[in-house]
Image (cartoon, rainbow, N blue to C red; front, side, top):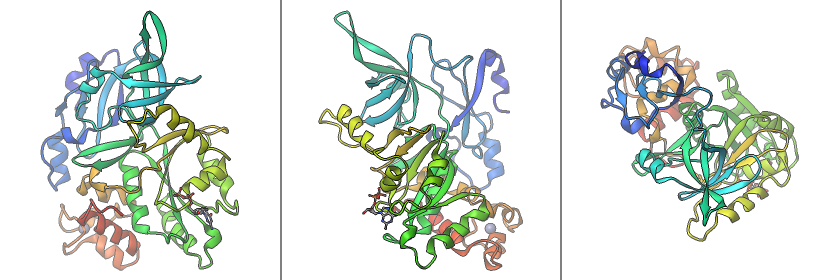
Length: 380
Ligand code: GDP
Ligand code: ZN
């Protein structure tokens, strides 16, 4: 364990595994994972006050931080959940009401190299502003709890966390109009898995599917162990199963524009998307107009994060040499490749390619891998 040398300090703390800040990763990447893991072992990363973090090796893509026992929230702060962001303004739900908040300068400085020091889904600590001796109805976020389950994408030269603390990503595609793009589904799957989020594949518009296209695609993912759903927001078919999947969980909904994400959400809970209007109104001060994600509360339990502003994923947030780990069906074959640093693209005697030829790996899954590997930055 890379943290052994610092154990003394962590006596009172609780170790938490959170996302690794990639731009802090040292040393430069190698193709050899074994060497890479060894090199990274014990490398210290800078830590916010009261926390320590140690790289556990690039393979895990996680850092271990130590937070104070009995919850991580400093006692002088109120707890809330970030429901929407606009620039550096956040809407925070404290369980009773929605409060507009800014982010403290200390927090912004501390997390200076993160694109989203605070993001939708974050569990935060805030204090209410006081003006002229009175408590105001807006706050300042001073603490962000360690994250689990996050979806990141590349934005310019930085990784951007779109949403934090989600359990699952509902990847929506449609049987027709638009036609499904399995390659895009695979990109979302990799993005989800890389962030510690469980992917669920949902084919919508099955009412338009006379050819069985949806079933054929779902049949590709079921054997890989992924949950699959077939639904029609229009006819209502399969909508109950979508609701049951969302119940009591925190989920993010992703997928191409036009596949029926909004329609599905409204079929699951009529009027659900109307909440978005309320939230945006509060945040709208005329200046910050881009909203990328909104956390919506389900009446029957659970949360969904709607991502209307996110049309595509630049996969370069995930290092290329890690893709193979997120194609689960490659795992049994990878150890049999002739070259230990085989990328399964151009190499001879590649066990992954042989498995594709034998039909043990789906041809299009393999093609997705190669396309992603060759051009992570393609925005589909
Ligand atoms: P989003 O961009 O993914 O949120 O997609 P929308 O929910 O806005 O839906 C895009 C279009 O597809 C709309 O015209 C919907 O009426 C239509 N649509 C959504 N779900 C279904 C469905 O299950 N069947 C059919 N035939 N059309 C649907
Ligand atoms: Zn190979």
